[in-house]
Length: 252
Image (cartoon, rainbow, N blue to C red):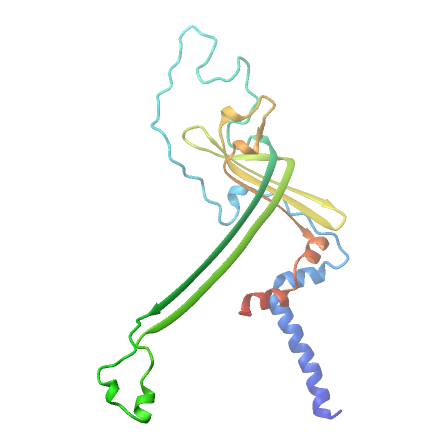
């Protein structure tokens, strides 16, 4: 092996390492520094102080002046004779029961065929009888004779089944003018070297909150439910960075 080749090999290795780090970015550096360590849990944070947080704006009905009944122990708008323990203002906590079951089975099949044939039945040009020799041989036997055949067939099917049943505590982050509550909850559970994350957000009606301060996820408007994880198992389930880059760039 020549000296120039031996010098180029370390440079090539260094270039490949640099490409790998540039493709992975900070994620690769964090994973290398956390080898042998359990994934760290994120700190408890104020959802309204996170970058990109925007207050929810929804269509509101016309405001109605509150009315009070004199000489009555019952206050208009109360949901119980005693103090209501259900969430009703910013900072209150309620439990969201996530009960998500989705199943789809779709099959489509399409067949299409077409055959066309055009024949003018005209085989004589004006003056073609006067042609002789090679000129007569060059005249086509039919002025117009077209045949075409086309066929296509397509099949497609979708089979999907998903189920998620769990509970997560959410915090009221905003009270809309009509009394509806904007809630957001995040839960992290670490088992060995894998962290499972559950995020729930949306808009709920105070009337839909049960007496035990729980609400079903099916009654959350504009619901955003995310369930995933990070750690060693998640890393194995994902393709390598190089494969992901090739899947995006290669046209075949």
